[in-house]
Amino acid sequence: MDVNDLLTETYDRLPALVRAAVDGLSPEQLRHAPGPDANPVGWLVWHLTRLQDHHVSDAFDTEQLWVTGDWAGRFGLRPDPDDIGYAHTPEQVAAVRPESARALVDYHEAVAARTRALLAELRPADLDRVVDESWDPPVTLGVRLVSVANDDLQHIGQAAYVRGLIERG
Image 1 (tube, rainbow, N blue to C red):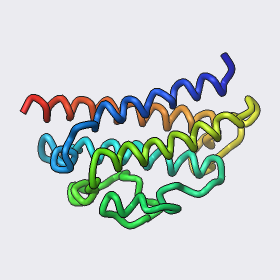
Image 2: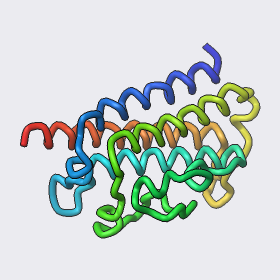
Image 3: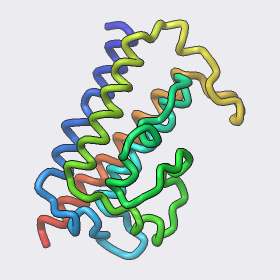
Image 4: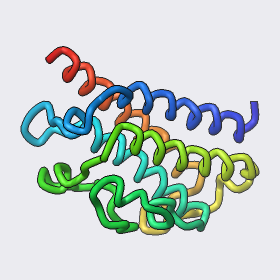
């Protein structure tokens, strides 16, 4: 298995997990926080998708899908390219209001398709390219792609857990 296949296999697992986490949930359920300062399913899926859109776009020097379409409007937000949910206050978390589960699935699938296309063009030597010099040591493309996948997988697990809490009442 080459690096393209390995990364594609990892990222291609996410869309089905996103669908499983949100399908059938109402907008109210998507916004339901299971406790104070806890994140709802809708915010978790929005955040993991925003993170992938933002970081992969930056790493491959391409524009974020978030700012090129009407994605933000479907979440009650502005198309701020820097808003990925990092350090959101409870009020900011509550402001992420997906219109439906379909909005979350559609945005994630669009980002996933773009990520898959970029990964298909990846060469092994590309993984050593520095994409973020603000860290010590600087972050390479390979490290960034693993970091994004790791973060996304953690958040989709959290979303599945919160969905389970919702379903159990």
